[in-house]
Length: 626
Image (tube, rainbow, N blue to C red; front, side):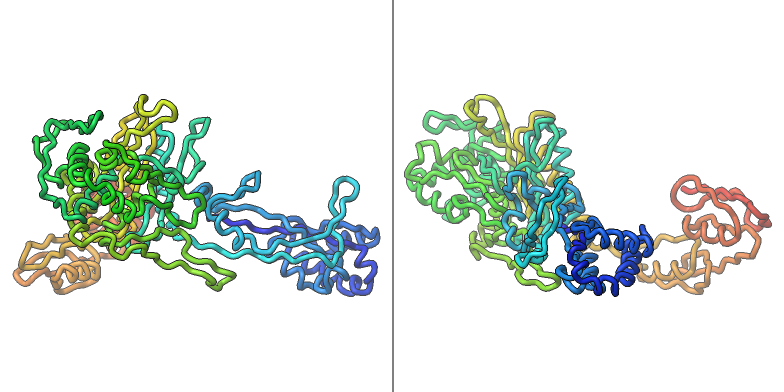
């Protein structure tokens, strides 16, 4: 995804060769032949003439070749004359580094770079010592015209290449994530956003996209929001509150809670639901489906008001008070007050995602624990470090807590999250082919000195798929959407669905097996005509034998299955291709020397030339398909 390749300016200090004239004269013919083969823009004779002129003038800095590759430079050091070393041949390689990104700006911030001030970000900052290798050292002298002349000095150090860092990122998924995020940010005129996709059972980060709005209104990876920005999460945090309640045995999915008209007062503050409730009383499962703030706030207040420390301890255990450990530098610190400093309204607001600031990665890790059966796993992005072709370090999955949640808690939380997509606030993510589970979030966020006075929102969706056997967990967070909606299901959910669909399309093991048709249980469809071997294979797959197969056949059904009748295809005579697939029809017609035009889609229903008609050179036949 990114590499810094060294190139070399090959120069010769002919003062050294003059001191060793016999070596130069004995090897010059071999050198120019090799030069002509490696760099054919000049002939060996032209190279020889130039080198002799420079030799006679005792040039201290003769530029033989610019931008030679590392391989070319190493090869040239083994050539006659040059292999005698810099002090005898005068040959010196001046290193220049060139940054290459084969996939453009894909995951640029995550992969990292060194800016103009020398500050390093991303993986390049974390692994700079491994990546940079050993820098070469060369004593030089500035001469007239600003030219730098290498000196033959004992202090010179030959550069050594750096090690290679292999990431867990899947390029195709990274591309889809960044593209979907970019289009959503533009469509909703949002300030910034992020997408993170991980393997549920390993914690491997398969895609991590971060885009922010620039001064010219374009978007670029200016900050790693996924690990570096802590905000109030909103409704996606409700699952943490519910998990705490379930772990303590206070509630189940069927626990009933009074929500009245969707408004409740706590101290001097009022908490409201976005929509009026269906009924004055909801089960906890339904409260999560419709994302009721009042229901979660009431349950938390009821069970933890007298024991704040109990709720606090759960949230600490869930990992919300510590920075996420990841290879990327600068993970965001959470803001989470000690329970002794909580006010009278902290618990009901904390319950539905306020008065706590966490990063998207914190939320992702907690939801991933639900997806994988209760394990809190540390996400990681570096898979291995290699030196040449040898792996010198590799990363294994780190399980922070083997059983963060009880199996009964995991089961009920998964039922809730599946219901959110099936009948709750995220029905727009429901499909016939991939079952998704997750939770929407629409948080009102503070805006600098103005606080909450000016409406500003953060849309999010966190979940996993396939719901019945989770393999991937993903979070999408969009900050400050100001056009075309701001709700989590619409703004963030659409990105989640697009990335999940891509993963599904590339993962054949997720696809449901095609239901096979068996003769006798259902009437088999008849393929009218075609290649006999193809027909035999198709019906064998469907559990039926085709009798009397030949090269080209017409099929008919009988009590024993399907029988074939041979089709005669005389040379220089138009064959009857009606009923055939387009592939078979074109093959037959073109082998007879006919030029084929096609109209429509499907199988051949009509042909412009009558079967049996004699074929003349250049004859055109039109096939009508339906």
